[in-house]
Amino acid sequence: MGIPDVVTVGEAMALMIAREPGPLEAVREFERATAGAELNVAVGLSRLGFKVGYLGRLGQDSLGRHLRAFMEAEGLDLRHLRMDDDSATGFMLKQMAEGGADPQVEYFRRGSAASRLSTSDMPAQGDDFQRARVLHLTGISPALSAGCRELVLAMARQARADGRLVCFDPNLRPRLWRSPAEMIATVNALASQADVVMPGLAEGRVLTGRQDAVDIAAYYLERGARQVVVKLGPEGAYAADAGGRADTVPGRPVRAVVDTVGAGDGFAVGVISALLDGLPLHLAAARGNAIGARVVQFRGDCEGLPTRAQLAAA
Image 1 (tube, rainbow, N blue to C red):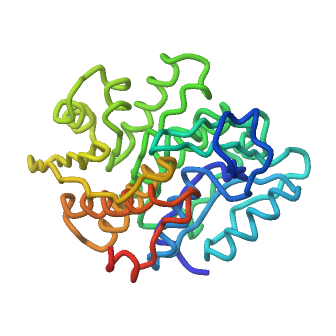
Image 2: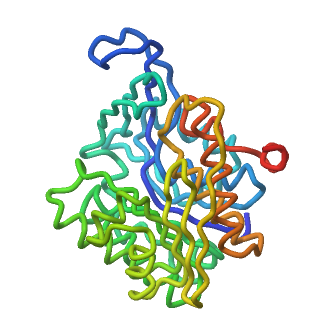
């Protein structure tokens, strides 16, 4: 299989999308798809032609087998994806929102197979997964369990010590944490191990106590990040680096917002892929804006992630 360009660690979940609007308790029919922030990024990068390794656990059940087949079809390197006989695959329900509103989402992931990840799942030194150019992490995995937290922190420290690029999206999920204080401390500890940090504006305010994108970016640059991109939603992004360059990159117009879930993951695909292509940070942010804008025009989390040809036509 060779050395991946990118490796990510996370929980892939089955996604049940409502086929009719209204509160989830009233919905009678759902359509099955896939979900998971790290999975979305892995799929997006694979579609752009990169070799992507995915480390995780799925239950040895119908949902897990469906997810594994999907991941195989998307060309992911699954040599470190384990099938767990003792725990179930996580899943989530998503409302059909109208008028571009954020949909209601419910998670069913407590005690899932992925929550059983630990440092015992960490690839050994010399393993191809430990030689990938980029390690991509989010703030979701460390919220799943103490074992997950130890794993992602260990992988981040190892990657940085090896001189590989660590990219981090806070991706805050307050409902998964025991307290806001624990969430903020853990996510910022992981961000301190990253070279590229990509918070949303609202996330950055929670995590740093600072209010504008310039100050949020400065917070992470002061703590060791080399590049920070603050997502500003439809307004675009603010990109700054440790060398003193800073740019506000305008957003892309969208014909109609269908579903906002997954837009941030699409943004991460754009930034990471552009950095791998050797582009400067402001152009990476522009690609992030383009892919994020495309993703919100599709219902599923992965459906709007483009191929190279689709990206060029965007």
